[in-house]
Amino acid sequence: MSSDGDEFFSQAMSDVVPRKSEPRVDLGRSRRAGNDPSLEHRRRAAALAPERDRNRLAETGITPLDAWYVLSFQRPGVQNGVFRKLKQGRYEVQSRLDLHRMTTETARREIFEFIEGSYRYGLRSVLIIHGKGESKAEQARSSIIKGCVDQWLRDLDKVLAFHSALPRDGGTGAAYVLLRKSEEKKRENRERFAKGRVAFDSG
Image (tube, rainbow, N blue to C red):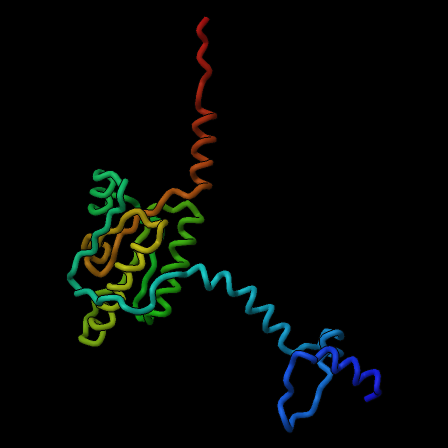
């Protein structure tokens, strides 16, 4: 390495303490050439980080629930008549998510993405099947997933209400979920209402 190269290296690495017994490498040259091996990894991590951070659902500290326990949640502002219709299964199920055989980690990701996607597409009533379990091992797993569903749905602000389903839709092994109206649907409704109005002619 030339004296000029040594001087450049010393300036570039002045605030770094080199490890003993390891050869010095001019990292400045490889980075200038675009050959930094960790650069692509850091770019990918940065691109994925915002999506990961959006899922704030708890991973621990959730209480399992008995297979026959009835889930019921109504956010303030939801009319009693609307909640009663949800409990009675009178809203069309527009999409469903089956959590059978999923781990809690997978279920956490699937529920978050399912609710986000349903809201984005303007769906209002969906069904989440968490199961009751037929064997003791399945009952233990299902009770954990059921407890997670109860907690996670409460923590998602796009969820207005939920209630355990009727027997025909899975009973206490599933839940009807009512979602907020998406901004896109609100806009469409405003436009439809505006088109339907007729100007009043006082003459």
